Length: 98
View 1 (cartoon, rainbow, N blue to C red):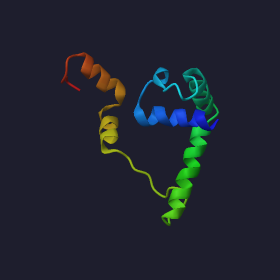
View 2: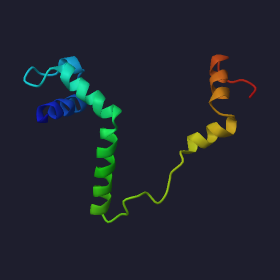
View 3: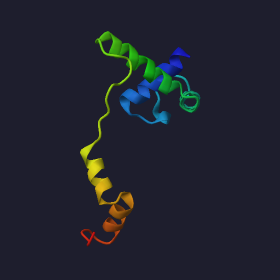
View 4: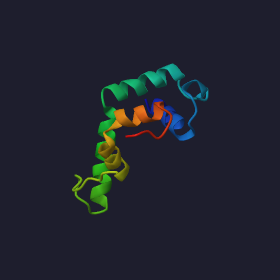
């Protein structure tokens, strides 16, 4: 299992495709199967959450976020009428009478 995890980290670090895994690592089909299984059962999400809590505690923060951030572009999109109007404007050839 350690080698399977090493192979997953190799793919993430190098950006190579699954089929391009070096031959000294487990077969790409095995590595991909475990990666997909970990995705489906939310193993990656649980690992991320636990690591985040550890890092935040180490730097003296509370383990849960105390504020949220809204991207200003998202607000502007909502003011226009949402994604449906933006999509229609793009399809009609740019600026329209919205």
